[in-house]
Length: 193
Image 1 (tube, rainbow, N blue to C red):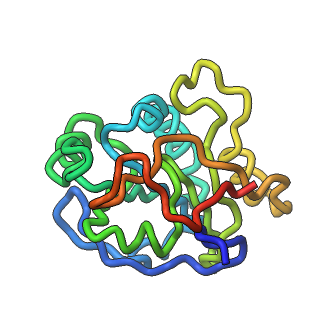
Image 2 (image 1 turned 60 degrees about the horizontal axis):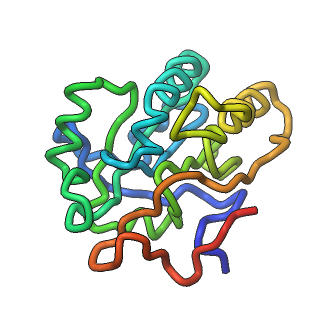
């Protein structure tokens, strides 16, 4: 069995605290026809290098029924910058157009099979997985982007078409698992394509 949830699988529920101090679960985002869940963090250069690009994507699709949720599952014991307090500071400074959730136990990252930061999961109205992988092919330096996989998947789905490339490999730092070396990945974790 693959570490990462597969196409057609249902979104896993969660109950996580956001930077606004409130707890959210999957049903709190039910008004969105499409839900993009990304696993991210505060420090990774692939995240910080593409945050503004991701902001542009979120804003481009917000009036088309697409919601964005970001989840930080990284252990602050590995990188102190990935703490909940630093999440609040980043949201206060950058005011990103998504709900930023803290997965303190890392249970949600395991449930989804998050591989890297960032790693995107796109769910349809029934909350079935229709795309997972990267947003772009150069997240660390978006001036070099030649493939916009997340936008292509959203465009195709919103047009009622099958997604031409539903799986891509996420590009970024690996999730920082608590008590493990900074570069450790679960044994069953593997590339998606």
